[in-house]
Image (cartoon, rainbow, N blue to C red; front, side, top):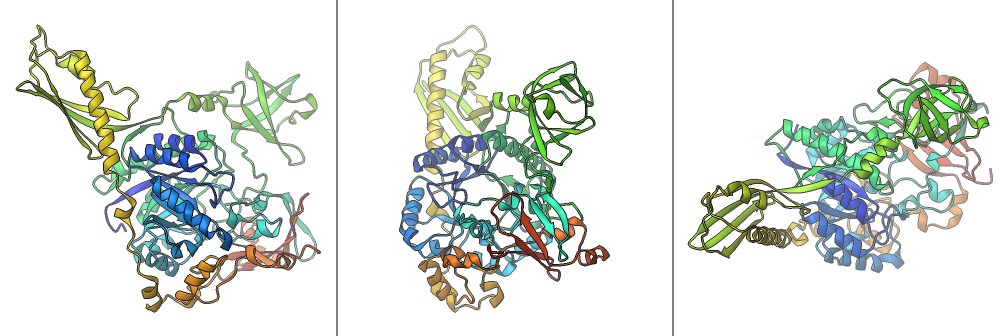
Length: 636
């Protein structure tokens, strides 16, 4: 069920300015990027000047720039965050993606606020209050099913955003303490150490080792390229690609793939949906998301709240295995792989395999000759006969992307007229921008029809963002106009369109969300108390005085202090570090609701392999189908 005709937004990540521009060229309607500090990826910070340049570029296409301020804020950082927000507003940022609700208490400019996935909006009640607090867009958890998304959509009017592609966190976002407890690097402060990607030994209650050196908390990557229709029907309007630490090639490839898919959907449902930005994108290559880094693909819980055995995990390795090529045979100093004729092997390809001990290995191809591969390996490192070989780096595909020139053009129509000594060139583009240029010119007849000559000159837009798709030439066929005059008219017209676009871009305060005063909210009936308390309630754990003040105004019950501000001795106790919809029992085929589940005696524990991570105990809430992960005291 679809409420109304609405704009659809493809939201792409950018680690830096060049990646953001590339995403826009490949079809992104919006880009999210980190600023100088307090983004959830500390390694992807950007200067205000670079963000200004990205805003200027994006706004030409009516694309938007969202800045991530989605970490917890400490008391001594409140003023620096407020000052940063003021600077971001001044350079034209369209919205902030936030986690810490202290920002709601700050004296900041009228900039839109989006509730980050770090806010952990698992319930309809929480989504409703996010809207009432004034968030114009909320990012739903990756774990939600289409049915659960639809319930949020039916009970709110706020724009809903969902992840469609990229890495998956095993814990609900915003509710993971594992990295902090195991080394002081807080995921809620942009410093996640990704301990979920490490290998562990799984031991049962009798001390039996069930799994050895497996990446048991590592999930496959999200891929909903073929599920956009279901998400749209459920109420999603913003489709988010994960990856602010990814390379520009990754962002270009995945953005182009999803942009093309959205366009196909809109073409099939005309007059019901539009893209939220303007311009026609030409990637310059045929996208293929399987060629970019992934750990295997899953749609996660979108269509099934109880996925079966081996549906979600990437246990063998947390790295990119790649596409299957075939099995190998060894011929002297070369490797021969039995592959279909449709697969081409290239010098520089990256190939991978699992050795006899199950260890993940990789190598570069030095040379391919007559279907024989000469690897960058010593002879004793060769894979054994019959080993399955994969390719995680396709040199030919990478070269195609690197050489491709992605373009984005604004569709424009122009009209040329001549009346009483005045040449008049008029344009209107798909953004609704309108410009008129005039030039005094004396009539000069020609011997031949000049329309083709004028058309070719007026449509030469070169490296500009404009594509002239329609020319209405009302000038007499045999009137001669010098090429230099036509070129000058065209140049001035493009300059006028640029100025019109810049002057008509909506200012943030014209879109300022209609927030109810907090004093009014505090006097209104609140949702059930359980939705007003952490960890899965309205607020993330409290880390500063302004968030506490807001909780007091709204009479929020049972608010937790963030672990990051508690005494360090808390990390020496048993503590819940994750809650996950992913169930390791179910993934391994030992669901407690099946006969096989009784074969695995609890408690189950995960012991790290060759790392200082604490041993973790698994607790299973079968009624709600959730898994809780507890870090045991380090002295054990």
